[in-house]
Length: 528
Image 1 (cartoon, rainbow, N blue to C red):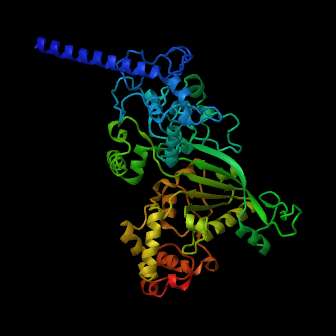
Image 2 (cartoon, rainbow, N blue to C red):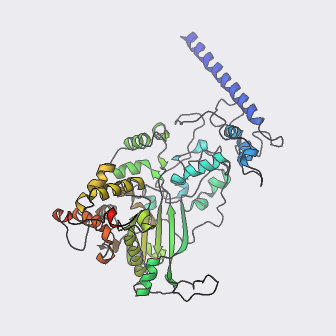
Image 3 (cartoon, one colour):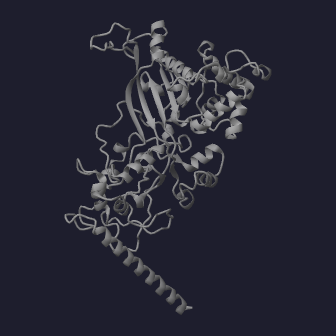
């Protein structure tokens, strides 16, 4: 038995020696690409430090090429193309010198995730979110995925093309929020906020030690700023007297200019002051699974299988509980004093709006999305002018989270099949297999992050949104829908179908028998 074990040990040692030789050979090839002025690898200036020796059998995390990688991939001199600086094949060798690392495992050599306790009341106890694969952070990763959601793909392209150094270190000085979003009790409740990092806007401050002293790549996932909003629809409302200029929340726009540079006498309209926050998704997988009433294992398997196997670590790293999904973010717009959000004595008006590019941006009249959004903003402004505060939360869930391509295919089916209200939901199901994928279970997280404890007015006819908020522990005192006179004629199909399906309405009731009478515009009625 001992002789068998000795033979096996000999084979293992031989294999390790072979791997060491292979790594040294690879390193020699890489060194040939480095300029002669480069410091010795693993020298004092190497960001990789002394995590591994040059002859370590660990091929996955060798930091010895960090400096050369930075030098060769950084932007070339002015007038010199990236191709002239280094060829694509050589750049690939420098960027990714080792074997393809498809996944990692909890007991793998060198793996030591930075401690993370979701829901801890103090950020130092909670710990930072680290998903970076840079040499300084890859062993300490405690999250799967990448920052910036779907935009992480563009970052990868920029690195591949040589326009962005993979080791670029952001300068976060002077980027702190201009308006405070202070910690709330919900931040320390692991069940209240599970879809993003509540400390995401304070990362450079609360995780300064990890960033500056430990050299870890920790990034903000929330940014808070201030802005002015200008909408032509609100200009018209001001001209009608529906919106009043107060010099604080609603301002008169500065005079316009004529083509010759002189001041125009045309009414310039108004603009609205707002505070806003962009929030990237950061999922705490146990909490997300609990919110949807499924097991964490099932959630991980579905996210792996039905994204084309994009994230193998969802399966191989059950010890890593945080996932940054490649989906769109949300944006919060606050009208009035943000401090009033937590003051239950102040009136609060809310609109939760899901993205509709066709209507919100380009004004398509087949749905009521833009009219709802503009009306809600005006309601929020009026609430703020009464001494309260208004909130609009804008989610990137295009086409009921089915996507714009699916939405347009549904439009084609509706217009070719007789666009009547009785076929509205069926048309979506025929294409997508489901009416709606905007599952609202995660939506209330942002309200708890803001410290909202009650909602006086909610502009929405969605029972899914209403129920999700109320079931999360936030009461809604009043809700109301879009006034009749703001509903575009061609979107009557959508509205009547929703009312008949049980959506909230303060107007007339619609029966199934009425739906066949509601018909949308056909393509033949207008030139295209």
